[in-house]
Image (cartoon, rainbow, N blue to C red; front, side, top):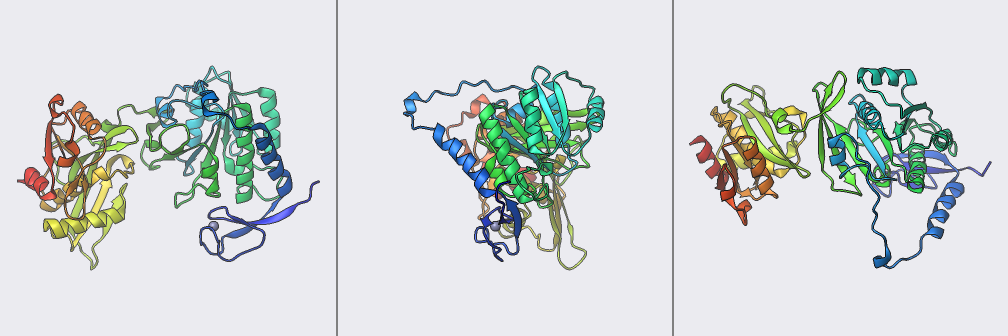
Length: 454
Ligand SMILES: [Zn+2]
C-alpha cells in the first residue's frame, strides 16, 4: 500500500491546502476546509507523466482536423444542447435537483440508442428499479446494460469486458475510488472519480455522461472544480410540479453554450417539445390585463414567452416584490425606472411577476415585456394578444437594441403575431419589407406606453 497523506479541501471551491485554514485563500469563504485522505504521489504522477510523454509540438497546418463523427441520438433536443450530437471521448455532466428526471432522461436515451452499446452504471437504484422504469417507458434495447456498482476500479473492469460505446454514471456522488479512504460524495472522492473517468473517456474515445445532483442553492454538489473538469455541463431544470423540463447548456467545449432543449414529462418518459412557444404562451379566451409576450432568445433558439404581472395595493407596510423565473434585482430596477421615468406610482404596490411555463429567462430582451405586463396590470388595460416585444430597458427609460432581432421577428411572424415592438436601434441593416408582420420601432418606454395603451 502506497503512503497515504492527508490534504484539506475547500468545500466551496475545491482549493487544497496541506494544513487546515480558517479562511479559504482562493474563494474567501470561512470554515470550508475539510480533511481528505489522498495518496497524492500515485495519482498525480501517473496522470501527468502519461500526458507529457505523448504530446509533442506539431505545426498547426499538420494538425489533422478531427473528422470523428458525432453520435447522433434519436433526441433532437439533446443533439441541440450538445452542439450537434455526442462527441466521442467527451465527458458530459448532467446536473439537476434530485427527482427532476435526470435518470429518466439518460435511461431513455440509452434505450433509444439501440444501435449503440450503452452501459448504465447505477449507484442509486437497483437493476430491478431501473427495469421497472424502462418498462414504464415502453422501450427496450438489447444493447442497454445495467451495472449496479460504485467502486471505480470494478466499473472499469466491467467496462473492459463489455466494451460499451457510451458510459452513463448515475450518479457521480455515489462513486468511490479505492485510492481514497473518504466517503462517497465527499469533495475528494468526486474530484478523483471524475478525474479517473475523464482519463478513461479520453484514452478510449468513449463518451461518458455523469449525473450530478445539485444543492438547494443551485450548485452541483461537490466542488466547483467538477464543472471545470468536464467538457460540457448540462443543467436539467424545471418545477417538479409542472410537466415541463428544460435542458440547458452552461458549458460546452464542443459547441455553443446557452442552448436549450425542452421536454414534457409524461407517465412513459420525456417527450421532446419541438415548438416550445406554444406551451410558453397560455391559452386563454380574450385579452387579460397583466400579461405581455416577450420574444426572447435562448442560445440559438427564439422563444416567445408570456410574462404575467400582478400589481395590487400593498396591504401591509412594506410592499412585496416577488419574481418567478426572472431576476428579482432586475425587477426592482425596472420598477424604479417605471416610477422615475414613466411616472407610474408603484412604490406602494405589491408586484408579483411570473414567467409562464416554469422557465427561467436571463435574456435582457424580456425587459420590455416585463415593464408592459406591470403597466398593464397597474392600469388594468389589456395588451393585444397579437402583440409581442423584444427590447432591453435602460435606466433612462430608453429601449435598447438586442441581438439577433431578425430571428425574433421571424419567430413572432411564424407564430402568427401581428405586431412586434422593438428598439429603433435594433433595426439597422434589417430588411423590414421581407416580414409579414408589423414592426413597431420605439426608442423610449413612453412611446411603447402610448402605442399600446393610448
Ligand atoms: Zn474556497
